[in-house]
Length: 140
Length: 108
Ligand SMILES: Nc1ncnc2c1ncn2[C@@H]1O[C@H](COP(=O)(O)OP(=O)(O)OP(=O)(O)O)[C@@H](O)[C@H]1O
Ligand SMILES: [Mg+2]
Image (cartoon, rainbow over all chains, first blue to last red; front, side, top):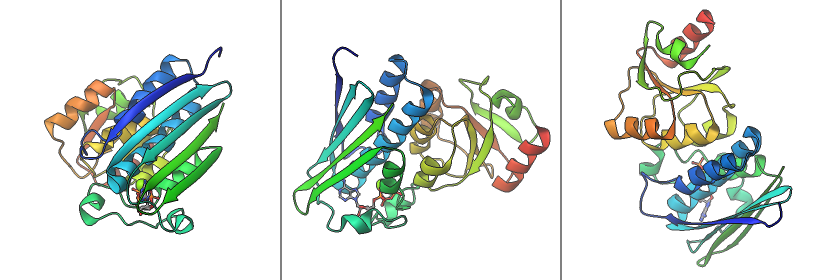
């Protein structure tokens, strides 16, 4: 790849029915670029979990995806409440999702663990009251 | 087995079949979306009783072969339309999840 490709998305924090649109669009772009199904799947799952978290827990945010030589980087940024205890949030089963969200099938406390599992690198930067930035990398 | 073949077995039906030629290689049963994202494999048939719009994005991104709505669960027309436009196969099934999976493996 001569030059890195970048994609930017605004993630709406109000609209639940369209949640996941940025991830669906990234999947489409990666497919058009000829990426293998497993790489596309890993990026799609990790990004969807992060995108949904911004909708449910942070009132929306932005997603920036960079496709570079050998690596796809996803940066999710929100100005939500932040994560007080990152270690606890990363544990399987930990969730603060409200009941109305749980009835939709979210709130298993598996999103952050999935993001870790499907990426080669993941880092959470969060300040309570200011927001959260999550950086993930998938090597290909 | 192809998704279209499974749809024609007694007890199953078609809700949206934009990619009926797709091969099913296994089954995952679950209703919690992040479990499905984390544990279902590509080309699985995903059996669930969840019917809200978010199942379409989950199925597409987790790259499963089809969604099977167990227990005769119905789908809103808008969800069906979204599934068609996103290329996500959805089958109906009158059986509970276990029997649906059992029937699939018996007919393989
Ligand atoms: N962007 C965010 N801003 C604020 N809090 C967050 C954010 N992302 C995650 N969290 C916190 O971390 C917890 C765990 O997140 P995780 O994605 O693992 O589970 P969940 O979203 O609650 O449920 P699931 O992802 O299984 O549907 C959340 O319940 C929430 O308290
Ligand atoms: Mg989550």
